[in-house]
Amino acid sequence: MKETIGVDHLEKVFHSQNDMEITALTEMNLSVPENEFLCILGPSGCGKSTLLRIIAGLEKASSGKVFYNGREHTKPCREIGMVFQSYSLMPWLNVLDNIALGLEFASVSKPERMAIAREYLDMIGMSNFGKAFPYELSGGMQQRVAIARALANNPDVLLMDEPFGALDAYTRIIMQKELLRIWEQRKKTILFVTHSVDEAVYLADRIILMSGNPGRIKKEIAITIPRVRERSNPRYGELTSELLALLEGA
Amino acid sequence: MQKTFNKLILSLILPALLLIVWQLSAWQAQNAAVLPTIGRVLENFIHATDNFIGLGSIPRNIGVSLIRVLSGYTAGVLIAVPLGVLMGYSKTIQQIFETFINIFKPIPPLAWQPLALAIFGVSSIASLLNMPFGQQYVFWGNFKIAMVFMIGMGSFFPVVANVMFGVQNVRQTLIDSARVLGASERDIFFKILIPAAAPSIINGLRVGLAIGWACLVGAEMLPGSLAGVGYLITHAYELARTDLVITGMICIGGVGALLDSVFRIIANKYFSWESKTR
Image (cartoon, rainbow over all chains, first blue to last red; front, side, top):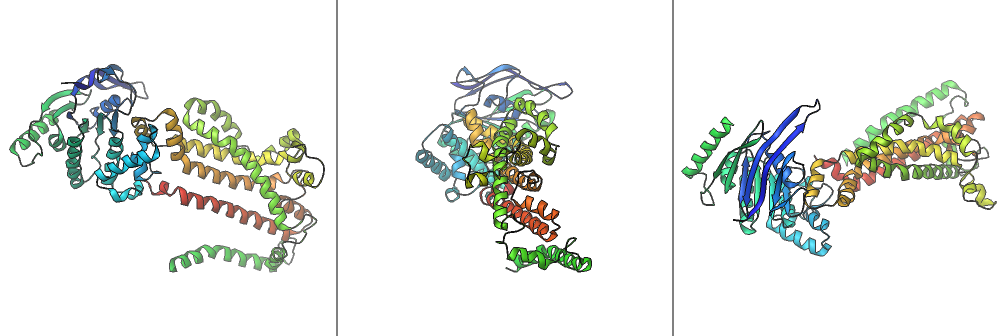
């Protein structure tokens, strides 16, 4: 299968103020095939967000390389979109202008980008909120807009950094369903960072389990339960318990 | 309706108290040179268009002062805003200018008066533009470069500080979001940093204008001034016309508050997102 994202011997060392070296990531090797839904699961501080930021090109690796479609990737680009945990919408732009922002950077004409933005607005089920401002929306709606904004750019790869982490349990479940629906509709390669075992089991084709100090890959698990996954499925429960046990040992 | 009324009442308590204390003290003092009655000052406003102590009407003096402050303010802002944006944007530019600015910041604009006078003398907008002598020249001669300089100095520092703060404090997530959407460095600068910092920039412009306006009396104490509210106060003091001094003070306070409310309205209208964004 064609590899979309490759990570090769990646290491990230931070220098703290008193010149201490903190290794956030070490010996990271990863190969993500086209259209895979990959979840990166791990406890807080295990470097999973750092890994995502390096793949996005927002941070530099200390050593090692990131490949996108076989070519080395170091700078942010439109083909690799990203959704952040929260508060990433431009507060001075309304919902439509936010969704159209990436297209504006790409110099798409105003009528054209507004038409595309409308289409994605409909997709996230917020047709009546085009003129609303981010502060008028609930956290769940803001995240939907952030996802629409990333998708409107039509990226190949979508990096998601705990995008539902700040949402309540109910909204979170709805958003997970919606994300899967969107992913199945417009095939993308998704790298999804989370610290929720349930979320990872529900969403992923494959889970990369990370452990901290220093951050590295502990285990890889393929999830073969067919979608839509029922949380009552015994296999679902087994996997969840297994992963929780592994996390405790992480 | 009831709410607005209550708000109005609350905000009027202290001014009313001040007026009462003023009036009682004025009766007590029995000396218009120390403290005139409210009536005396009110009369000046009723006859605002009269020619006061040879300096012309009150609106004319306010007009002259406004032009002075606005020209000094404009000059200060035209340098301060771009500099503040660049200092907020680039650590290197900030390091180049910050210490330099911090040395000059604590110097009150009034302390610049002797130097301003020594450097710029009595040159004015009129002489700078090489205007032919005549009525126009006399009018524009009112606007001495030294005054404009002092007011500009007063406006400059708060504007630079606020603009820099605004640009530096743009949330990193917003910049990162723009980058992963494919923004160029130019996009980041004009489409993210500037709009995100706009509320701070407006706030800086507001504080700058307030301080520029407050520098007025000091600036208009410079020789060569023949009009302006600040000069009116100074000259009225020399003639022991305390009622006119107070009239001038009220004008400065009133116009200052009016200018401030213009900025408040702009901020509420266009930048309300700032206060509502968590």
